[in-house]
Structures are given as structure tokens and as C-alpha cells.
Length: 282
Ligand SMILES: C[S@@+](CC[C@H](N)C(=O)[O-])C[C@H]1O[C@@H](n2cnc3c(N)ncnc32)[C@H](O)[C@@H]1O
Image 1 (tube, rainbow, N blue to C red):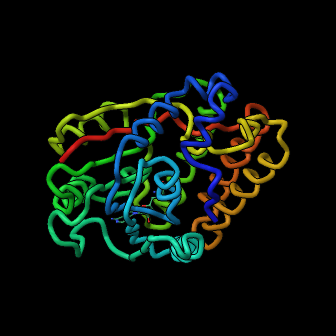
Image 2 (cartoon, rainbow, N blue to C red):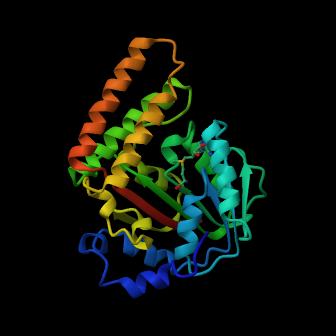
């Protein structure tokens, strides 16, 4: 459940006690920007289990309601949406199974539209962005948050990127669209394609969630056993997804690559990729 003691107010109380590299990571600037925005009726495209809705609830100045849409039909996606519904029970959040391309909403029916870590999952990025622009009311906010590929500042980030690329190969074998991270310039091009007014671009190498987390980055420490075993387990689970793939050579090659990534995590830890956060007015 969302607790009342998390949120931008609690971050403000903790600023100064945040680890230095988190304080200077850019994540705080993004959270402050969100803290100046009244979200109104918010649409989150490619919502998964609503992780970004949680972040927005913690950071937006205020909001009326959220609609999260996702069209994933795998077991994990269906479970993710069910978990999201349970997590936000009693909050003004609705989850809909819907494609971001050709959405069944009226023109201009949202005050804020967003997509977080979703662009590289889309089969047709331009079509989804165009439809998001259509359902945004004139003067509303368009928010894009997305990782990019050339922003590694640490070995831990490089390891995370390799793991992500390894996952894209597995998803592609299973017929799912999952691209490697785009370049930073490509993300800027997507935003300029939308022709937003007053576009603001923020760079960060720390997820905003870190601001609300009491772990203070222990999770990046390879000696942090809980995080380490969790990551190892996730790599095994990801590999298991291709257990029925017909070509054993492909399965074995991918398993070996997974073992190399496990060793790299054991040595350097793993830290989320750098990302761009862009907000403009429609
Ligand atoms: C990495 S997840 C996003 C996670 C979430 N937004 C967050 O920030 O925690 C990307 C999601 O995009 C969804 N997706 C991919 N193509 C889509 C489309 N055309 N319409 C709606 N959702 C889509 C996938 O099913 C997946 O759940």
C-alpha cells in the first residue's frame, strides 16, 4: 500500500541526509519538477503494474485520478495488472487492457499523459505517441521517461544494460517486441516529433524511486546479499521462459550468456540505466 509518510514532502525532510550521489543524480530535480505539476486526470501508457503511477502519486503537486493501460498478454503482464489493481485498491486508479495505438478515449480527455520505460517496448512508437497527443487536452502535460543506451557511468550500470539486452533477445525469441535502449538523441527526436511547447529535458542516473527508498543505495552494493540473490533468481526465471524453445543450441548459448552476466553482477553489482525525463505542454 502507499504510505502517507512517503512522497515529496518526506524527501524534502530527508534532503541533506540523502547520499551525495543520489542528491546530485538529477532525480531530485525531476521530482521537484513533478511537484510543481497538478496532474488532473492522468493517463499512463504501458503501465505494467503501475510503478510510474506510484511515483507520480509521491511527487505530483496534486491529481484527480489515474488510468493505466497496457496490452501485454503474457502470464506476467496479466499478473502485473492484477497486482496493480490490488495495490491501488481504494485509490482513484483504473487499469485497462488496451493498446496505446488507437486508444478508445475521446480527443483531449486527459490533463496529463505519460509513458515510462515503455518506448523501447512499442512496435510502432510514432503511432502510440501520436495517439497520446490526441487524447491530451490542449495545454496538458506530456511526460516521457525512458532509459538510453550510452549513459553508463559505472560498471554496475553497464552490467544492468547487458542484462537488459540479454532479456530483449529472450523476449524477441518469444515473439514479443522488446528493443535495446534507444540513444539519447533518438529520445530527443521522439519528443521533438510531438511538437510540444516548453519542452524541458532532465537527465538522471538514479531512478526517482531511490528518493523514497530507505535502502540508501545498499541495493547497488554487490555485498548486499538480498539484492544479489534476487537478481540471480530473476536471471534464472528469465532463462526458464525459453525452456520450450525448439533449438537447444540457442537455449544453451543464452544460458551461458546469463551465467556470464551473473558473474558480472557478483563482481560489480547492478544499477539502473541513465534515463531522460522530458515534460512538455500540448
Ligand atoms: C517496462 S514495462 C513499463 C513499466 C512501467 N511503465 C513502469 O515505469 O514501471 C513496458 C510495458 O509496455 C507495455 N506495452 C508494450 N506495447 C504496448 C502498447 N502498444 N500499448 C500498451 N502497452 C504496451 C508492455 O506490455 C509492458 O508492460
